[in-house]
Image 1 (spheres, each protein chain N blue to C red):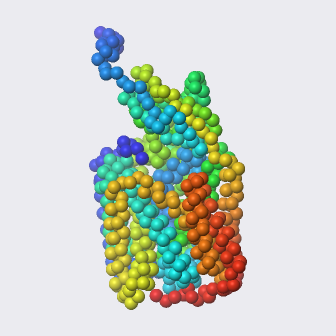
Image 2 (image 1 turned 90 degrees about the vertical axis):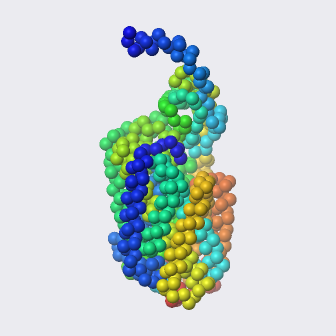
Image 3 (image 1 turned 120 degrees about the vertical axis):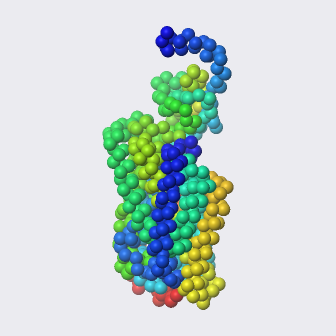
Length: 474
Length: 135
C-alpha cells in the first residue's frame, strides 16, 4: 500500500469514522436489548427471515478484499482474474442446499464444531478446530490490519487509530447485540455497498467507453485479455475451491444456517450468492479501466480507490471510504460473533462447564468477543505486513475440509478415517504446493488430495452412520 | 522584459546555483523477472521522472508508461518476452536501463490444474445434487 495516496482530508475522514461508528454502536445496542440467553445472542433466536438472511450472507462475504483485492485481481490477472474472484460466489450458492440439510440433521445445533465432534469424533474435531481457528484468527487480523492501512491511505488517519476504532466499534456492537446486531448492521451495510459499487461502475462508464478500455488493454496489457493466461487460468478453480472451503467449514456460515428460520436458509444463501457474484466483476472492471483513464497505479492494491477518486473526485473518495468501512465492519463483526460462539459452545460448554446456564453462556460469549478484539488489536499494533498474507496459507487447509463436510452431511458411509486423513493429507500437501508452485494452485491441490482420500476411505468403509446422533439436544 | 525572456536570461545562473541532481535509479534492479506478466517497479529520484518501456536495449519505439513524481508504478498484462525499462529525469539525467524478463507459468500445467479443479467442482455439485440416497 502506498502511504502517500491520501484521497480525503483527514477531518472528513475522522467525521465519517465518527458518524458510522456511532450509527453501528447505536443500532447494535438497540437491536440487542431483547437478548436474554445464549441462543438469542448467538443464533438470534433461530428466527431470522429471508430479507435479513440474504443480506447478511451477501454482506459478510463482501469483505474489504472484495472491494480492494478484486480490482487488484483484475489488474494482475485480467478478465479471468476478475471472473476468478467472482467464483467465490459459488461458496454461498452451493452452501444453500447444505444449509437446508444442516438445519434438518441438526435442529438443536450451534456450531460447525458440533458437526465435526458428533459426526467424526474428537480427533477430527481437534484438527477442525486447529484449522478453523487458524483461518478465522488470521482473517480477523488481516481485516483489522487492512482497516487501519486503508483508512490511513484513504484519509491520512493514523494506522493505529483507524484500526483501533474499527475493531472497538465492531467489538462493542457485537458484544451488546450478538448475532441480531451483526445481521441488522449487515443489512444496512449491504445496501450501502451495492449502491456505492453501482454508482461507481456507471460513473466510470460515463468517462470511458468499453471500446476505449479494450483498445487500451490490447495495446498496453495484452495478456489481461488472453484466454490462455496460465496464472489466471489456475486461479479460477483455485479461488472457487478456496471460497467453497471457507464457507463450507466456517462457523460464520453455519451459525447463520442455524439462525435462519425454517425453510429460509437455502433461499437466503442462494440469493446472497447471486447478489455477491457481480460485485467483484464491477470492482474488477474499475481496475481494467485504469489505463484508459490514465490513472497511474503506484501499487496494485490502490487501483480501486485511485480510479474512483479520479472519476468522482471528492465524492468518490467519500464513497470509497464508506464502502470500505462497511465492508470491513460487516466481516469483522461476523467473525467476532462466530468465533466467540465456537469457543463458547465447543470449548467452554462442552469441556469446562456443561451445566452453565443460558445467561452465563451469553456473558461468557460477550467476554470472549472482547478478548478476541483485544488480542487482535495487540497483534495488529506492530503492523507486521506479512501477517495479513498468512491468511492465504489457509487456502489448502479450508479446501481439505470440503469433502469431509459434504460427504459427512450426505453419506452414511463417510468415515472418521476419511475425514482425518483427508484434512491432514490435503492440508499438508496443499501447503507444500503453496510454497513450491504458488498460491494459485494450493487450494486446488489440497482439495484434490483430500477428495481422493475421503472417497477411497468411504468406498472401503463398512460404517453406516446413524443420522440421529447429530440431533443432540443442547 | 517578459517572464519568458527573464527565465531564459537567468537559466545559466539557475543551473549553476542548483545542486546537481542524482540520476534516477530503480530499486531492486537492474534485472527483474516475472512468471505472471506483472511487476511492481519502484525507484529513487530527486525529481519527477518519465518511465519508458521498449522491447529492445536501444529503446527504439519506446512507449511511455508513466510521467510524474510517484516513486513506484505497477506494470501488468505483459506477454512472454524481454522488456527494457528506463527512467528519464525531467532535467535530462537517465537511469541505467533495467531488464524485465517475462516467462509465464507452464500452460500445460495450468490446463491440467484447471481440468482437476473442474473435476473436483463437478464432483462436489454432483454429490450435493444427488443428496442422501441411503437415508
